[in-house]
Amino acid sequence: MIKQRLIGFLVIIALTIIFWPIVFVAPMQEDDVVLRVFEMPPKPDITASPRKAPETNRLNVEQLPQIPLPEVPTEQPIDIAVASSEVSLIAAEIEPLQQSSALERATFDEQGLPISWELQIATFSTESRAQSIAEQLQNKGHKAYVSPVTIDAKGLYRVRIGPNIQKSRLLDIQRDIDAYYGVKSEIIKFGV
Figure 1 (tube, one colour):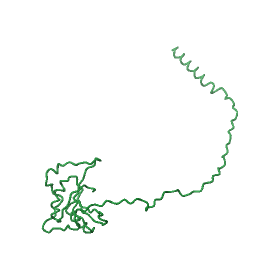
Figure 2 (spheres, one colour):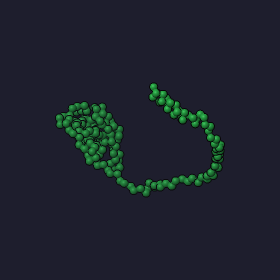
Figure 3 (cartoon, one colour):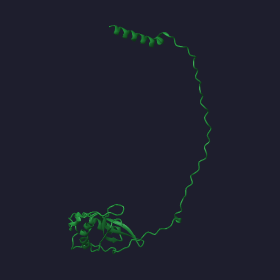
Figure 4 (cartoon, one colour):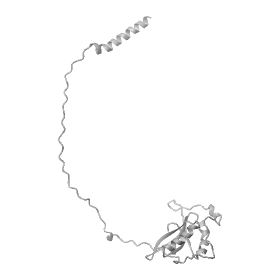
């Protein structure tokens, strides 16, 4: 019991020491602090420099060197594709005739991109005739399209099927398309 009274007495003394100055001692009078009032500085007088158009280096198109476009060799006769009435056009959904084509792997170029192939069927002097042949092939499920080319400063249109990574798939349909249209088509690299 004496321990409890002794601890209580020490706690009261500690509280008295802490709170005595707060309660019983008057705060010291400090001089009133006067804060300076700062005035806004006057607005600066800015005069803008006159704007002038930027100088650009305009090229005269006539001064540019003329680079001749490479002429695409024409190995196919023009406007000879005519649909045959004796042979029917083969559909694109058929299975490959060569079993190895299903297992054929893609080949890659020096950039690591797969090399694709396309079947160039015929070359036409009019776009409407080329579109007509392309539509016939598309109706049978082939990925046919018309590619414009310039040969001897003359605009021509080539009908192509593709691209296809498996060259043997194009070999399978080439013979039938050649027989149907009476042409000698060729398999070329896509993008040539």
